[in-house]
Image 1 (cartoon, rainbow, N blue to C red):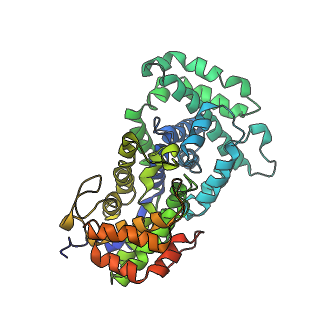
Image 2: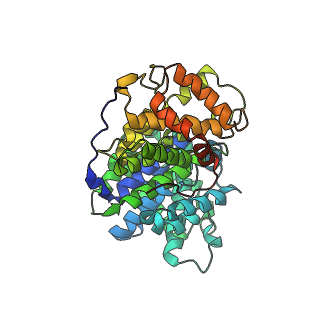
Image 3: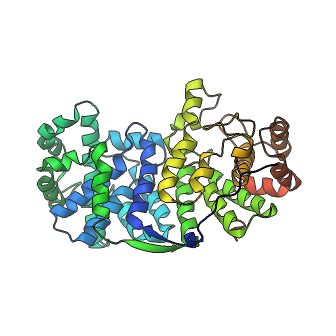
Length: 431
């Protein structure tokens, strides 16, 4: 078997310098996939929060906090159906659930922990915020709540009207929120909105063509870099994988199981420790592009239509777009984007074959297929290990999967099957 050499990985990744704001921005771009038709909600809320913080006279550190917390506010939302409800109604009875989930997710990654309490309360009315809550958390949470609800009204308006007309309607947009001063929103936060919204630039910066430039202008105004150990990088991967897997009850634990299967298989194949750990991170993140896939496709009990299959075929490329920004100068984006390639060229999205597909990608592909077949799905129950291997035997015979990598899986089939069907988020065989 001739293989492309494994990409050289910069060992300084062991202690990578990460800008927390830019990491949050990249995570938010992935989360914005959930909107499908509106892929900028999280970033707009972040920028609006920053502009309101300016209106309140907050210092640079507090404004930066508002920006990042605003961008991350919907990290508990990975379902397109939940997202639709959140952007269709001013208040929604089930909104608290995603706030609680978001708090949990952020607490799992140290650099994002400081935003978790704010996110927990970002759909709590101003009048109902717990008296015991820290005053700054109250201010941040309500600021983001106001920014979030403003963006819902803004997005609804621009979906039906030319973008420039929002400059004529800005007072009418604010009037839709004005009746809720003192109940949903604090008077001081709303006053800050009135100040900020007077400027045409406030609304123009929300346009997709200006949005990221406006955010990066803020992020570049200070030094918020921190040094992350490899364990922190893995924790970030696990955070994102939990968001992805929460999208559907049929994909719970899929990413972490694929990651641990790939890690163990790479170990049995003799790959070095560093490459194994990079591959594990790729396994955690390989399906991040599926956030863009509607729930009804992932949970469809029957076969997919050609149109639905075409939409599914985009998710590896979507994963690459996110992961290149989050983990530059590593093969993580490359491996993730190619996990549906086949040795006979029948895979997607690139149609690579044979020598174009390197060993880590072959391992990831087999791990993904094995776990998916072992997991209950909407169109079938969980398959036995014998049934899984019968399907994969045919794929190997047909020249789609690497025979040598598959033989390692098959020789250890019971151990791998137990790992594939394990529930929970324990980290297996990480080191």
